[in-house]
Structures are given as C-alpha cells and as structure tokens.
Length: 115
Image (cartoon, rainbow, N blue to C red):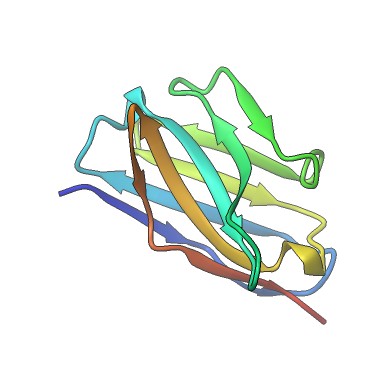
C-alpha cells in the first residue's frame, strides 16, 4: 500500500521556521522525483519545490527561493522541506508528491503563518 505521510506543519509567527517531513512507503522511493506543493484557500495548488530521484537537482518556485530548502534521505524514504523566514502568504496546506511516470500524493499538512 502506497503511503505518503506529511508531518511538521503548524502555527508559526512571521519570520519563523518550520521543517516539513514526508515519510514514504509502498513504492521504490529512490526512483521517484519528490515535490512539495501547496494550496492556499481559494487558490490553485502550486509547486513549491522539487528534488530529483537521487537529490542531485532541485528547483524552487520564485516565491520561496532563498527561504526554503528541499532535501531527501533515500535510506529513510523521507523528503524534507525546511522553511525559513516564513511569511503570512506562505499559509497553505502543503502536500508531498512522488512522481515517476505515475504519481502519488500525501494527505497534506497545514502551515499557518500569523502573529
């Protein structure tokens, strides 16, 4: 059974940091590119960051470049999103995505940036 389980979301003040984790199981994690998406209320889901299967290539949305870092540990079947200097506009549900021809999604974790 394929599972992507996100964790690490929560409420944080502007300027703060959070680290999201996504634990994968039920598929060959090391073969899949991994991505983080987010969806804010009333907005479309958008790609935040992506990392290639062995971690050699990363990409970021312009809105998070220099603030967010995606990484993966293939030994632990886990992908991370380190989020620093958070802004209120980063508030969204964050989803983990695995893609290698087919794709899988996690259930999402809420991130709220507010004072």
